[in-house]
Amino acid sequence: MAEIVIRNTNERISGEENVREFLEKQEVLYEHWNMDKFPADLQEKFQLSDEDKQRILDTFDPEIRDLAARRGYKIWDIITLSESTPNLEELLQKFEEVHTHSEDEIRAIVGGKGIFIIKGSEDVGYFNVELEPGDVISVPENTPHFFTLMDNKQIVAVRLFIEENGWIATPVADPQFQRMNAY
Image (cartoon, rainbow, N blue to C red; front, top):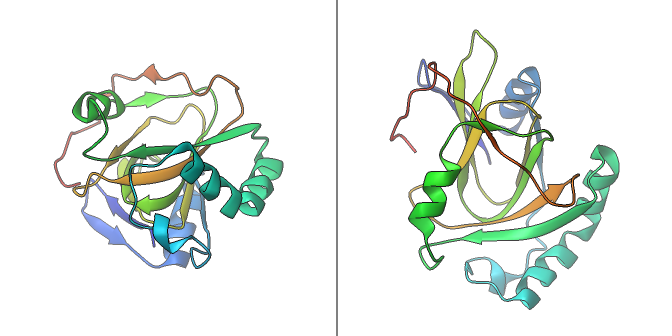
């Protein structure tokens, strides 16, 4: 279940309803998928074949199609990152820059853990959303944020897109953003 850390105060928010309520106020979509149907042989697998990726997409096809219908997504895929990913540190440096997109950025976590760092309202500032399997989050378009891995450096996620060539990141130089090693 997702947890939130407000970076300015270190306040931690947990519990599905509390997380959902906080994120709704920040205009961030949060849902939770039932992971009971996720194939056991894929639950701790972070090097996936194309067949494995298709099995994941097939397993969550009803949830993906429901989300796509409600939010206008046209295509989706699987991303997997782990210590075995070539150039992982280089990729993480690219991911760990505050940026925006012209469409919302959505992740449905099905394996491992990840974290979105999102700029909230003026009274909140930046906050971390720590995600684990079953958590689905959508950061609104034009909202400063970035996504990275947690200490375990393993994640498998479904990504959904409106634009067929994916997101284009626009870097944001924000003096309010303070890099922390708390994730």
